[in-house]
Image (cartoon, rainbow, N blue to C red; front, side, top):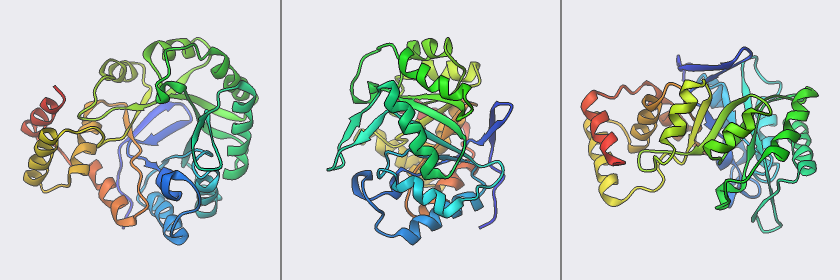
Length: 287
């Protein structure tokens, strides 16, 4: 498949990414734990993502753990010029695959070094701090944790910093410590609690990476999605992705899959133009 002319977003002088990215989480085994069922297929998906023109790959060393980063290194190293790998720190896995928040500053630094090693890099393009908010945590200060990553940025081990699973006040606090180039939060047609933060990120030229693009739909919302998708000759996944792309100029997507065919379907959503009546119907889904 030929490279597509995917829309890009420039959030720093040395950081331009395709708005349609690829989330590598699903390349690990069940529960994002252990090796993939088909290693060759996982390698093929990563290489196809790059061939399709994607320059934004989202990962973490706690996917596997280490499994996904090692797959990325095997498939894509040495990395093409212009390919940007965005990783995150803030969690560990137990021996059964459980997710354990790990936000001690010393361990955050250790996690950065593990990402560097397993990806085969000397500097990470973007490191997102994943907060406990994803586990129902509160709007606590993240100054100590973000400050630890800012120290590694000053040392040249990280180029840019971002946040994952955060509140608007946490973004404000982080910006007093170091520039923030990306926010990763839950946002989709049915879950729009982050509307104000989406708007703020657009105004401040911060990439907003929406995850779970099809999460939380009730039957009525799903029916509307299916009806519009059928009318436009698209899949419901493509429609949800296309709506997100038109929602904000700084919206970026990181849909994940372990299938080459599904990857191509997702990327094709970047070329789907939604007519005004379809946008109106979809906007009403979340109201």
